[in-house]
Amino acid sequence: MNSTQEQLRVKLSQALVGAFGEEFATVDPILVAASNPKFGDYQANVALSLSKKLGQQPRAIAQAITDKLDVTDICEQPEIAGPGFINLRLKTDYLQAQLNSIQADPRLGVAVAKHPQREIVDFSSPNIAKEMHVGHLRSTIIGDAIARVLEFLGHDVIRINHVGDWGTQFGMLIAYLREVKPEVLTTADVIDLGDLVELYRQAKKRFDADEVFKETARQEVVKLQSGAADTLQGWKLLCEQSRKEFQKIYDSLNIQISERGESFYNPLLPGIVEDLANSGLLEENQGAQVVFLEGFSNKEGEPLPLIVKKTDGGYNYATTDLAAICYRIQQDAAKRIIYVTDAGQASHFAGVFQVARRAGWIPEDVEVVHVPFGLVLGEDGKRLRTRSSDTVRLQDLLDEAIARTRADLETRFQEEERQETPDFINHVAKVVGISAVKYADLSQNRTNDYKFSFDRMLSLKGNTAPYMLYAYVRIQGISRKGNIDWEKLGTDTQITLQAEAEFTLAKHLLQLDEVISEVEKDLLPHRLCEYLYNLSEKFNKFFESCPVLKSEEPVRTSRLALCSLTARTLKLGLSLLGIEVLERM
Ligand code: ARG
Figure (cartoon, helix red, strand yellow):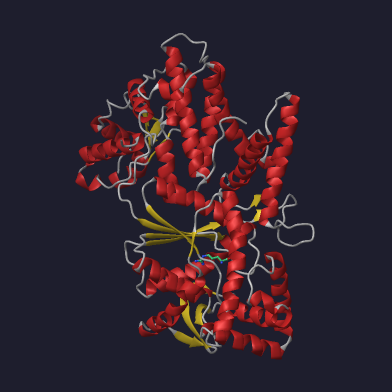
């Protein structure tokens, strides 16, 4: 099934050609949802944009287009309004037929991508021997949601954890551990990540202050790079240790991801620099090998270099990302590579993409995109920190969300004199708590900074996970109350629309595929949140104004079908955000 918007676009294109000739086949009809239901459901604004080109009044152009426009199956007679908008109102018959068809479709009318392709989502990507911080949490949540949407659309997605597991810092850490806690380098599980992070800090201090230690650390890097057995074993244990901690977070959040860390690309780095030299892009700058970036300059107006080989001969973050691009394009055959990191890395990616492009590594049909996100702020509007001004530990944060949810639940159940088992309470607390954290992040336009507030994210009011989950539960409550088996209701019920609130709800239900294809394009999951939030609100209005169980047949069954379709849409939409629904809460 083609989305309504898509069908209308095609028809508008045909009308443009009919009115003005073949060369108008590629003109965008500028079809958007109507700003006000008074004017219909969609509006095409192309007439205004063609006025200059055609040397005609927009209204006359709109008229010429409508004269050729054949939308009788879908819309009422189009109307021209204002300076030259073409207003389109969907026909009731059409709406009903569409509803009946998405009802019978397990995908709820969301078509599989016309050209499924290999896509890579590079997300989460914490660093070994360091804490995973809220920035990584954002990347994890947003990256997972994007991957879920793309997978649902039938793309072949590789979820990659580009873990920071390589670099000179390991020489420093290993050298220090040899002195103060050598058993960490030979035995598993003798240190927890928090202590390791603390030792890392001390090692760094020592490194900056002590020339002799610096040299020892350097030798350790050389040993690591040449694969010396004892150093390599130490490094592996450090990685193992961190990996276990990361995995706990992924388990709590229900995240699937495969690790392909920086070290994976290590053998490819010399070749990358060589290729850059061969293509004439490489220059020497203060002893380092660099590529000067076009369009980037520092405050003094000098061109900015992207360093690919440092003065000491080592490679860096950028070199690894260049190797990763090549590998992902050549070996993985990726057609789109999506990098989910904080906005602070925007210039890093701009530089890397530019160099890869100039080196000829990115074919025409491959897209590389940085998906940036803003900071997580505390209630005070400053970067989120704990009282001791350390970064917040993610596990603590998730545990607190769950604990607070549990406390809320217990109070509510007591007030309602409801008896629930501890298992039930634990399960609900976990689902709601985790969903609240995820949803609070996803519902923001990711490019903005956002304030982390337990009170807000756990509230039953507003655009929050508890509100959304509750809307779903409420619909399930209808089926319990009326003893309705949604399955038995069947997917072939005839939905007929009468009341205003039914129309509003129905039209919204039919827009799921449009929203999902927007997320596929723009990689902005908050659009899906907004859609689901509006859906719950429209459902509530419908439910307040239209009796369901108390209606006479056939209205009763038709309304029940609308309820069921709303619940299925909520469930599907939330699942694409990585949020599971509850039948009761
Ligand atoms: N490890 C990096 C960090 O913690 C993020 C890596 C993102 N992915 C990449 N291909 N550079 O900031």
